[in-house]
Length: 226
Ligand SMILES: Nc1nc2c(ncn2[C@@H]2O[C@H](COP(=O)(O)OP(=O)(O)O)[C@@H](O)[C@H]2O)c(=O)[nH]1
Ligand SMILES: Nc1ncnc2c1ncn2[C@@H]1O[C@H](COP(=O)(O)OP(=O)(O)O)[C@@H](O)[C@H]1O
Image (cartoon, rainbow, N blue to C red; front, side, top):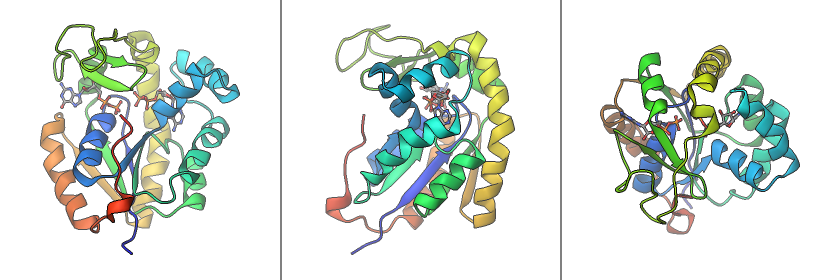
C-alpha cells in the first residue's frame, strides 16, 4: 500500500494558495482542504465557532487558535484515508504544533509574494460563497461579470478583502508566519517560492511534487472539494 501524502501551503492572503491548491488537487489527485472555506461554512451554518470567527474576520484579524483548531482537527480526522493538501492552516506556531501532534507532514509549501502584488490582487478578488470558487477580475475573470460561471449565481467581494481590513490582515500575517516557516525549516520540509506570478511558480511546484508524491493509490484519489 503506498503511503498517503500530506502537505500544507502557506502564504499571505492573496498569495495564490487557493489557486495553486486547485492546480495541485487537479494534477495530483489530492484532497484540497481550505481553512478559509471551513471558516465560511461555519459562519454560514451559524455554529458556535462560526459566530465567534465572524467577529474577528470582520476586523481583519485571524481567528483565535483554539477556535481554529476545534474547527479544523475533527475535519482532518475524517480524512485519514486520503492524501490531502491543507491550505490556510497553520498560520501560527500554536496551530503548527497542534497539527504536528495530529499528523506527520511531507511538504510545507511557502509562497513569498511582494506586498504590492498582494494588495492589487485582493482588490480584484471576487468569490462565489456557496462553492468557494475564486475569480480575479484581471487574472481569471468570470465569463459574465459578477456572475459565477457554473451556477449563474452572483459573486461577492469578501468582507475581509475590502481595503480597510486588508492592510491589517497583511501586517498581522507577517508577524505570525515567521515562527511557522522556521518550524518547518527545522524539520527540513519547507519549500519557498518567490515570484509575482502564479504561472511562473507553478512549474517549480509541479516538479517538486512529482518527485515527492508516490503513485497515489486509486482509492485514495479524490476530486478537490470545489
Ligand atoms: N494577477 C494575478 N492574479 C492572481 C495570480 N494568482 C492568483 N491570482 C488571483 O489573486 C487572488 C488571490 O488568489 P488566491 O488563490 O485566492 O490566494 P489565497 O488568498 O492565498 O488563497 C485571486 O483573485 C486569484 O484569482 C497571478 O499570478 N496574477
Ligand atoms: N488558520 C487560520 N487561523 C486563523 N484564522 C484563519 C485561519 N484560516 C482562515 N482564517 C480566517 O479566515 C479568513 C479567510 O481565510 P482565507 O479564505 O484562507 O483567506 P485569506 O487567504 O485571503 O486570508 C482569514 O482572513 C482569517 O481571518
